Length: 454
Image 1 (spheres, rainbow, N blue to C red):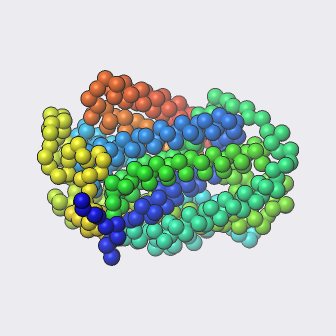
Image 2: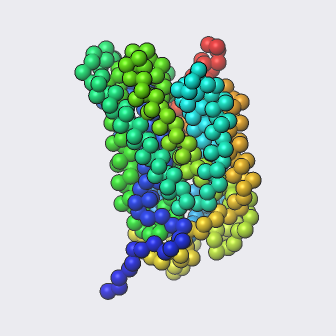
Image 3: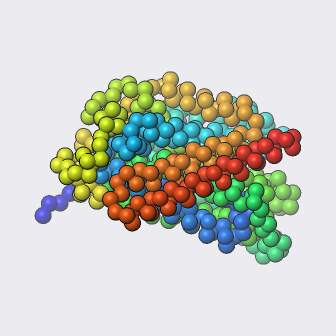
């Protein structure tokens, strides 16, 4: 019997199970969580919890199916688009990459807007949110220059602590309002316009599938990712339901996409609890700032690989080779160490800290100019485009639904060998298609309504 060690190699860029758990939890719990009270207000607390649970299981299952396919057929460092190239060729890989980049850059743009609006509201004389975004730009640029996920761990940890500290302050305000009549005065009025938007807001909070492969690939022991992933997703679902349900029960109907902004804008709560609410808003904003690089990482990795700089055949999956893979070679018995039936259980992964399949400290094609360009793109979008959150909602309905609900069952269908598996894939694909169509129509309708009402 052999015994494997669990120590991390000094200087390794890989993450431990605990660090991976923190990355997953913080990658999912962000500004989207603060929009959930509004979503639950539209649906009702009970239906909101049900919708949150369904979307949690749905998106988590899809994420895990992509991980299993990558483990089974591709090297450890393979990306989401490379899994797409393996399944349907380079054109499909380009579509996947476009969806991921649009989604992640949209999230980063919302982060910029969130920081500007929320910090501007609590600073003296209601400082202009454009000025606040400009002042936060140097800090975001500095954080975005960190080399890899390992270097991000202290900041991600700090962001998680700050976020949960803000939740603790909100919990204090909730406890003071728990016995008031707000819950008795609350009665949800779901409509054909608000229900799809509310469900899309919940899905937006679960759009972490783009982070899954980079985070799993950065682990020192990727075979341990399954239990960590399951625990993290269960934790995220519980936090989402607690924050949203308790907020609606304590404060009544929430009419703003950010619970902290709603409370500060409501004189009844602002006058009674301004101190805790200001601190909660500040801590949440700082947490978002520290989390920005984590959301930028998938787009940076994919665009860096697309640039092709410093690419070697041992470090990446060559797109032409992957795209030309045929089904017989995939389903046949493979003797290569990167593939095989044991890969699904993680047995192809070595325990050595710096094995060849590990994640290096640099991203192929990465450069300071690429990072600067991506950060400035999200900054300028948040500065220039009016009603940016409405436009981002449309991008989320299209690209988000594609990455989280449509692409995974298509990939799984490529590997389906039984009628039952194919039926499951078609069922998930049909549900994702309906969700995307309804969400997109609702988002476009809402944007038109906002612009015509101004």
